[in-house]
Image 1: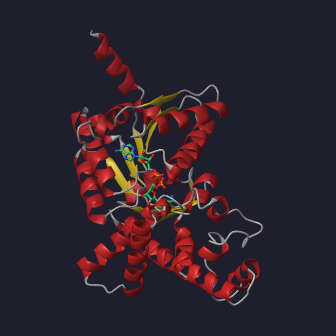
Image 2 (image 1 turned 180 degrees about the horizontal axis):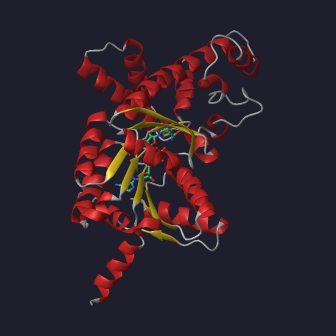
Image 3 (image 1 turned 90 degrees about the horizontal axis):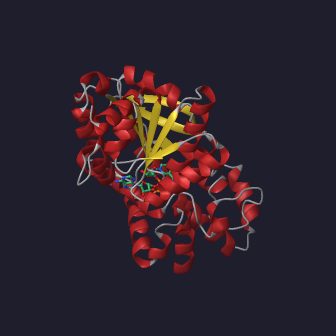
Length: 338
Ligand code: NAD
């Protein structure tokens, strides 16, 4: 038997105990940390594989994980194909539609779907794909249908709760897929989150997520406006935030993601770190665009959503240094405009 064939057979034999995580960014690295550490606590022989377009991101994750779990070996897969050959469970957490399309359908490197097609049917059938990316519903449904056609199962499982929730393992997962697929992934998702909701068939999790972020995108803008207005009237930002936080204006953007430094003395939102970490403005602008696209297709008017989307677009154009910062930096943008 040729050495490479023997090696592939050994690798395929280890798939049932192995999990691959693709996309080790702000959210993915925290989610993978919780998933792997909790799987390890239950099953010592668990194997883990990580893959990222930036090899440094995968290497940094491996270094930080093995510093806490020295006996654990984390393999780095160079491509989604390698990650698919290695594991029966594949979780993806990527920026958006083009990245999901590339990882699943493959571009110059092998993707998940062509690799599943090349596997013996019995191995494809036991494969489970969970995509937690927030992306276009139609792209997600097409990817899901192609995965399912290989015999594997797939759910869309976008998240709510931000980097803080990812780190604490308290995310909400909004799941789209068949009832059987939901049942299969529920125990896995509960290792990374607290609330696991079956929203309906493929794409339904994303639909719920996009509606949620439409609200959030508008909310963060109006909180910035109110905080600027209040300070112009001489109000202390901590007092103002405390009043709004316990009144009818209470919301996540005021009580957790407050954009004004010192406004939440007991917390540490991104504004306390020059808006580093958190949810990048470009990702919020992308989510507002996803809502606009669905609104156009369904003939739905989004007067506030469209206004907020244009504001994020303008902010990225005028102050590109805010694009990768947390979207609460819209406060800084509006402050400069005042
Ligand atoms: P991020 O940009 O920090 O991370 C994405 C990672 O994917 C990066 O490490 C990138 O190198 C990697 N990647 C890109 N293309 C790849 C490819 N072809 N193959 C392998 N890896 C690839 O983004 P994030 O903040 O972690 O967000 C991920 C998703 O979660 C987005 O869809 C976002 O909208 C959603 N989300 C983010 C938050 C948040 O607070 N950050 C909250 C909820 C949902």
